[in-house]
Length: 378
Image (cartoon, rainbow, N blue to C red; front, top):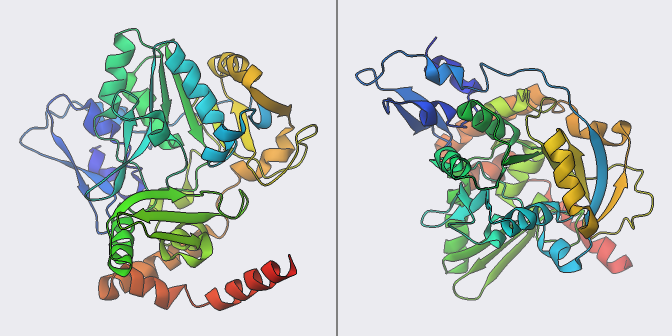
């Protein structure tokens, strides 16, 4: 079997390209900007290594859910700067204190995109917070391996499929590697993201300088988007009122196709699984609107890491029933796939913004009215 035969099931983890010893694989973006592998026949030696590291061809069933907690960092500033409860920051700071290196998603500029970077390239703050754009893997797997072989402590944070791809690429377990994934909502289109920012730059008359998904403008529970421009102007919007964020969060029209049937939603390979805690059972922790994380240890290494950060956290052990929502299949998946196909056709005709407004932005007035009434009541 050739790696190209994976087709639309591909997750874009680039483990195949990273593992190829003859540089015979190119990642070619489709019309939405999602990369897919293309084999160069003149370079390929037909060794089969690319298929042996593909997560979609080599997924093993794993026993999950060692221990489950909800909680947040004790430091309020850390929680304020985080999308949820600040657990990532606590884990990262522990690794950095040991002279280690942290890998996570960071923004690229000109054009705007998201890729995996390390704290040897960017600040820890650049890796913090959710980024609802599919991250480009690039050569990050190779950089992780170099750091591990040098004996450094490494923390890699990524989507469940990308973490699985990294582990298959490495071919063995490294005692100095800690992996973290999260309750993933899917990969969002890099191309639509760039078009959306270009539209906003034209509207606000300046260049984008910062993008912040979930800045807690209206509290942790109300998703929002904040974008700053070089002319000191700022765009702020509820997720439901932003064409891009709503397309991802509510409509599903801008996600990678394979995400709707994600096989990693119940099969995480990471040592620790993070997410937002929306369940019940947080006895002893004030359930305010500042942010509360879900934290699941998924290996012995994960349990050791939890013990190391525990003094800096407010934690409450919870039951599996309290987090059942985090592992359920996507609701109305087939309906959303059909919506995605319709949106793709509309995009070809009108571009991103016009297609979004025609297909799913017509109910905004009701949402705005509800928010206005709620504000007046307060």
